[in-house]
Length: 380
Image: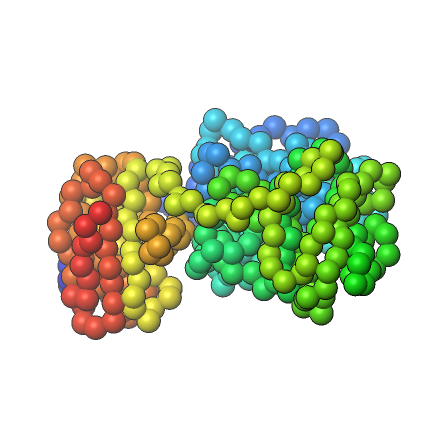
């Protein structure tokens, strides 16, 4: 197999040399400017990672606009689409609206309505510090979304209900907020004024379950066991709900409206729907010790380019099993390909995947530590 890959590389090498001039910089289509510049505005053209779907809303957030709690959900900070590209969107920013004297240089990132905040290739929160002037266009690249590293049920503002576990401080009150208020705070009295004086504590974070975004409040480990009366209010703005009696010894789910509080049953996260954004999908159940995967394919075409191929487009839990998945690409539908998962060119590869598979369905495979044939196709 390695000889075959080397032979393909040698065959393609002169073609690459003959296709471009050494005096020219290669500019890919998605790197070209696709939006018109507007007077008095900063234009950011954002290149999104694979796995971003049409149904996701993307927002820019930073110190300049008040951060995630303020920016997410506001149209002025939502990226707009273009018919010219499926992976590029843009946002126009008016520096005259920036708060507290902050600029883009104070840091900003992007948040997906379904896949949470932007992260770098290690999974750490990613921030940008570009500070372009008005009347300019700047390309910004998002490496990955936090959902890429999902490993189980947990928290976060995400369209996936299999978010990574969140470290909570004590028990949690989850709130489906239907009040219509601009802000939400939680005051508690009883055995103690658990969250300090009025109006109490701010929202700790959000979690999306079965399409419902819950705001949540961590109760604090030190408050475990207290018998409290919860009072939801609009952060001291003059509106509040009647007391809700709650002993802090369990998580609780509530729906609140401007008229009152209703306790809900704990929701069960639904199985995610497989959404095809770019052709069929190859799902890898990774039981190996290798965490950094790539996928190479050869046969009717070298479908993902040269070795080691493409990086994953994300992770998904199906039937309680977590898979790393790769979009095969609409252009490759109908081809017969040999798939070789590998540890991103690090020396480990599963050549057992060199079985000609016609790309006319989703493909599920399992890999594990062992020799190069530690690979099997799973029935679905």
